[in-house]
Length: 538
Image (cartoon, rainbow, N blue to C red; front, side):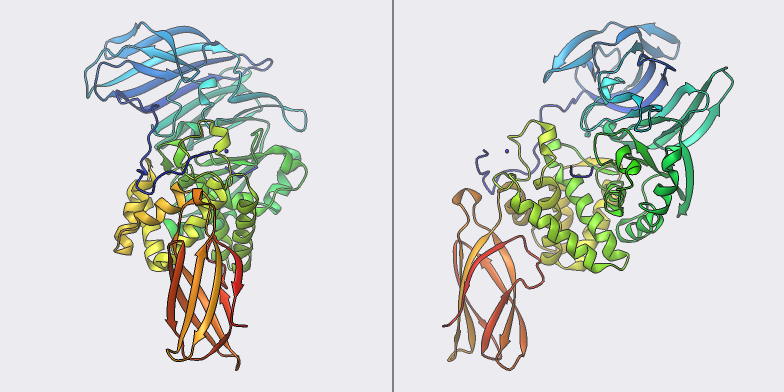
């Protein structure tokens, strides 16, 4: 998703694998079949949802997040012998409504339930007038708003495949995850659009979009076709401006990370509250930026990068959101470097650095387990600092180990949900050394290094003598990092050096070939640090 907090310092030894009490160990939902009827007028929908799940252990029950304001007409167990009514009750978890359905099987069994319901969604599925005054319906699930229109385990740790059968007024089109399998026009005045996503995806990315929409085909990349779905009056702008290089973006990211995860990619003008929403294979973009002709390529690159990170590989816990937003921010910026625009990549990183340093997120860690407001996690820590963590990791381990880690991480964890420890372990293997310390200091500590530097030349030892003090607040902790230097002599000769900084007060002698009269610190801006003072010989 495109970016539109007092915490006590966590110890460096604190575990990265933070898991909330949301996890429901007795169940694993593996498939949703969602049949939905969108009305010609009003907002009352009729839904019929069948869920297939595995009993993982324990006595149950099956717990489904669902808004109790819906009227449930029937709740059935789907058995080989037919359908039978099952008992259920409303409970509550974390202030949200939950349907509790007793298991009738044993651990290891695969069971199915079918919920038939009707009502008006309070959120999650937005039915109304679009920016041009035409009637539309769009899902807008992030972070846990899918349960306002269908029963689900509304958490990214439980991925599933999904089929849709969406009935709409004739003349409308419907876009959803996966590929289109059928369009049924047999019922007068109604058309049913059938979509199927065969790969498991997070519930918050399971979406539908419906209305009078124009479709422009962009062509395919390695068998995955791309298209733009927009309101008719905005179709020409969408194809000519923001999506003119969408195919190339997918191509360069596929070559860098791994094969594109899904059967197709639709770019959809929609009623999302965000600038963009990374729904798997069906990205939704804010309708107003289309209509005002203000949407640019940056949001497109960010949301495309999400198809790999946040969708195909998703965070298993919301507190690890940087695995989605930090990755999408970094690879969204990197897309332009891969397209032959390195300065645009550098400008994007510099802008992100500035945004983070000015934010109120600095005082809190990236993995902020004290924050329970999911919307508050859409902050500069998970976006901009998360992006810089990847950039600094690349500098620490080198391009070969970094991109090898990225490809391996995607290949191993595609279609699953992960925690930071999973990524850290992959990086450690490719770097051939433990890297936990790196993630602990940048993700579990708030802030960043603020340094004061004094330097001089030791003529006798032909060395550059460096004294570096880390003066950031004590609550931020200390950082270990490699500080690139360039020493310039009076003759204009330059010498590239590296200082290995560790601890609050640090002293090191670095051999040099010539007497320096100028010292540049981190000249290519590879570190998220702030140099408060640099003092050389008078």
